[in-house]
Image (cartoon, rainbow, N blue to C red; front, side):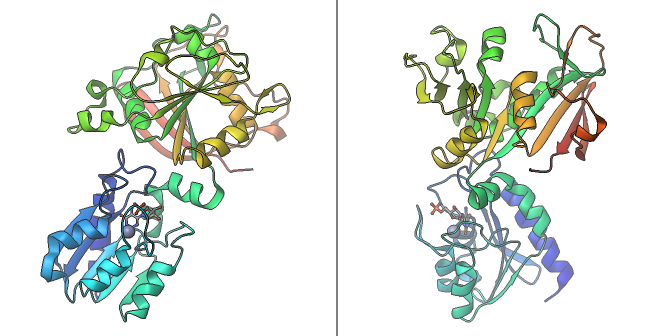
Length: 366
Ligand code: AOF
Ligand code: ZN
C-alpha cells in the first residue's frame, strides 16, 4: 500500500469521472480504476443514467485480472438495485481485494451501505482519498441528495465598470466568442437553464446548447441532451411565437396564467408576496425534475432576487474590456444602503477567455 501510488490512481479515476460531466445527470459523475500495484488492468466511468456504473465498466475491461486487485472509485460503490444492480456486489463477485473510495455516497439509498457490504465480504476499504477533488465533480448531486435542492449557479456578463445592459435593455454582445463558448459549456453541464420573462421579451433567447459553439470533440453527442429550459413568467406574458418554444427538448413555463403555450409544459407557480417563490422553484426542480446543477441566465432583477433570497451557490461573472457608462444597468439589483449589508463573495477561480475574464465566486448559503 503505497500512498503516492494510491493518490496517483485516484487522480486518474477523477480524470475519468470528468469525462461524464455533460452526460450523467441525474446521476453523479463517477470514475474507477482497477490496478495491481501500478499496473492498471481496467478503467471506466459512468456515461449515462441507465447504463453501466463506473465500476462495472472498469470490471468489464479488467475481466479475470480484477481478482486480488485494488479498485479506486471516486464515489462509494452503490449497494442498491436502481436502474442497475449494486456495484459493491459486482466488486465482491470479481474478487477485488481492496476498495479505495474518495467519498461516501450521499444518496440515502446507499450512504455507507456500499462500504458495509464490502467489509462484510472481507474486502479492505478506505474512504476519503482526494475527497475535495471528488466532491468538486458533483456539487449538484451532493446538494440535491442532502437538501433536495439543486446547486445554483448564476451566470452574468458585465463591462469593466460592472454594467450588464444599456438602459434600454440592449446587451448583445458584451463578451466575445471564447467567453460565449464557456457559457455554452456551463449550459451543457447543467440540468436546467432558468430565465425570467424580461430576458425572453428582450432577447428572445433560445437557451439551447449548440454543438457548433461548444468546441468539444464529442459536441454532437453532448448537444443531444438539451438542459431543461425554465421561464419564470408570473403574469403569462410569454409569446406563442417565442424562440424558446420552437427548440428540441423540454421547456417549463412557470406562471399563474391558465393559458396554454404549445411547446411548453405549464407549471402553476407558487407565489411569495406578489412574485414567484424562488425557493419553491428550487424545490420543484430538485424534487420533481431531479436537477443537480441549474444555471440562471437572467437580468439583474431576477439574478438579484436569487442572491437577495440567499439561494445562490456560485456566481460566474464574465468581465469584458469595455465601459458601458453610468446610464447602463448594474450587475444585480440589490437595494443595499450600508456597508454592513454587503454580500461578500469568495473568489474560487479566475481564467481568461479571449479578451474577457471569468471570475467564479462562492456565496455562503443563508
Ligand atoms: C456507483 N458508481 O458510477 C454511479 C453511482 O439508477 P442507478 O442504478 O444508475 O443508480 C443511481 C445511483 O447510484 C445514484 O443516485 C448514486 O447514488 C449511485 N451512482 N454509484 O457506485 C457509479 N453513477
Ligand atoms: Zn453503482
